[in-house]
Image (tube, rainbow, N blue to C red; front, side):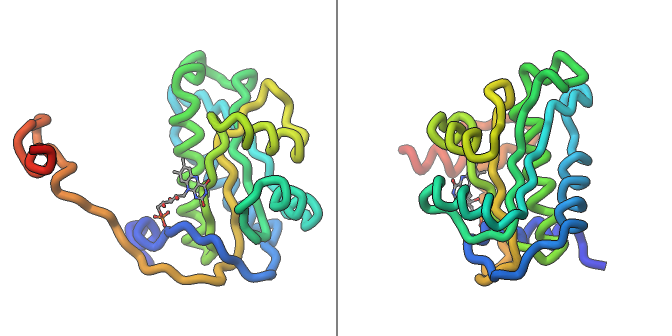
Length: 181
Ligand SMILES: Cc1cc2nc3c(=O)[nH]c(=O)nc-3n(C[C@H](O)[C@H](O)[C@H](O)COP(=O)(O)O)c2cc1C
């Protein structure tokens, strides 16, 4: 069995996809992964717009310049009206980021490519996503994930940097300070 760490290292932003559609069951698996994420006080302030219709995908691609030929999109949205804890008001960005990352890792495990594109707080992007997908003003899109069967390969990696790690207590000594000197 492949270790979960393999998927963490293998997950890379994939921006080129084949024409092969994504099965509905696969999209559902990704959404199950999203909703397995931790959230502050289990508030789960999230909603998801899952897109596989080629017409809607084409409209998104055209409206969001520089966007990709994925065969699926999941938009991770915040709806505080659905939150089951007041903690979500402060922590929703962290909650939705955890859900987003779960989708990316699940996609890697299922052999799909993905790329996280940011929505909130980019007002123009949020407006486009809201307009094309009919998302109401009270619902905030945080991320839009393109998904598909990969047509490019990237090597697994970490970007581990010892100089960014402080053991036991934060220390002002070390490589980062040396760089600034
Ligand atoms: C909050 C956030 C916003 C991002 N927005 C975009 C984006 O708009 N377009 C894009 O192509 N990639 C976007 N990315 C992907 C990053 O460019 C990518 O994760 C980074 O370059 C590291 O590469 P890797 O994902 O292959 O490890 C975003 C990533 C995050 C976490």
